[in-house]
Length: 413
Image (tube, rainbow, N blue to C red):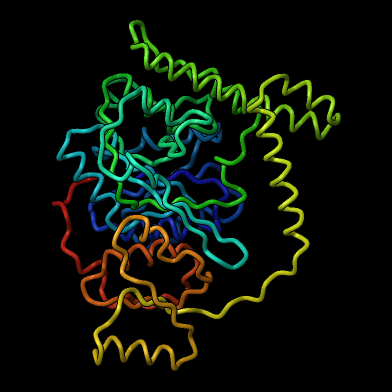
């Protein structure tokens, strides 16, 4: 499991705990610290002292793609699972990806994910790929992959998904991350793998939890970032590439140019005023619409900062499903309620959308989770997703994820 980190001290402990909790136990957790100055390395080392599967090494300090290449070169397993240091994974995440790799022979496997953010004392969640055809397992070809990762394309931008990669395939084709890229580096590598014959298998069950926060790299696109993305866009085209691939790449480049104009207009507006912004946008109507959206969102943020902060809500106990009347579990819930905690009841999730919203709107002070027997998997979504770094007082779930039999025989990942 590959984790690259730079100044993510508030989050990396939770990321590592979710990696350590994998039901696929025979893994190496490789942390590449790229010159952190905020305690990130110390937290990783503390976790490593608790778990010999964690190895912490130094990064090259030459950008995100370079440090990802350092992690690839240091990896010793057959597969590499990507986990960003501010994100989380479900306990069965790696096991499910490896099972798919074995069953299908795919070289790239990615699961749907749940995006989450902590806003105004509440957890907000959303299923990333929620519409058809993303509700079922499927194979993704090169043209579709490029189209899905184009500005103004499919809302399910699958380049954001964090894949399991076949390291033998990467080494055989001498593929690595493009060092020019600070963002979109995962998309670029996967696209080049598909172009070389790699098979991409998508799983709709969301087992990756993507944290949205103001310091997320994906949300800060500079002019240099976009220029690098534009230069790398044609890397998937070879002589004789099908027409649909060439058209998809052309569409992606057009989208990047629009976002680039928007970025330049924002900078021009800050420095020189509306006239300079107008010149930067030219006649690109989509770039104009992006500028209007940015202005609207900026106004909303300024108004929000003027509101009084809300008082911290009391800790809650989340009850998943309905315990049987007169059962010990029902008595436990009554005891928890008597202790002064707020009881929040959510129905047992019946689909991926319900799992994605299991803790949506709840306060970030979780004291315990209660789940009827047989609901360990859904409890796992609550524990990992809400657990983040919010559950300092987390009590063990009555139905332990660790009690489940492993899906696979041990094998290094």
